[in-house]
Amino acid sequence: ATPVPVAAKRALAAAGPAHASPRASIGSANIGPASVAPPTSVAAAPASLEPALPSAVPLLGEGPLAQLVKRARDRGASDLHVASGRPVSMRLGGELVALDPQPLALATAEQMLLPLLDVTQRAQLDRLGYADLAVPLASGGRLRANITRHQAGLKGTFRIAMPAPPTLDE
Image 1 (cartoon, one colour):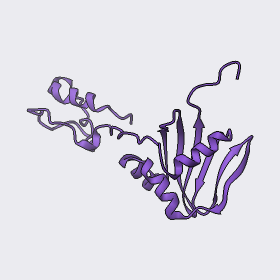
Image 2 (cartoon, rainbow, N blue to C red; image 1 turned 60 degrees about the horizontal axis):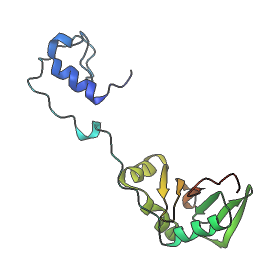
Image 3 (cartoon, helix red, strand yellow; image 1 turned 90 degrees about the horizontal axis):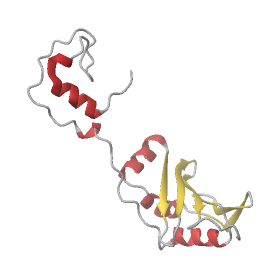
Image 4 (tube, rainbow, N blue to C red; image 1 turned 120 degrees about the vertical axis):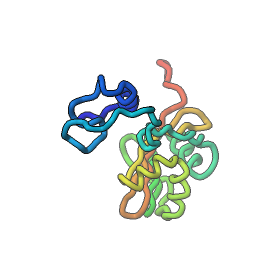
């Protein structure tokens, strides 16, 4: 069955029996003829049916992740890979190159990655194992990000978008 938008459900409920289907009312599990009296007033839809509005996206300006992004951008990297249990890497010319040879601790990865997620994205990470988002940079530009659970904990992959497209001379 095709989902019906909340606004359509409210309009049908307000219209009363003249627009009622001979089948069950929208959202009901009953599949026989409708036998429910028309509503006397339209109640607000439960909060769970309303679309979730994203929280304010944090601006990445200071801290260890911002420093890693700056190092990767300064070297012309297209991507930054931050994963617990692995060295922090960047993609240069199609190859992954370690920024630091030491594997990243789980606690450090979580401190860098989890603050980027709002409540809805954290719930998605818990439920599905990943979350996609965009992170604006204080220095200009943004990161397209994917934060994922993996065997050693958390992993963040960031596509580095430049603050402005290159000119034809560049």
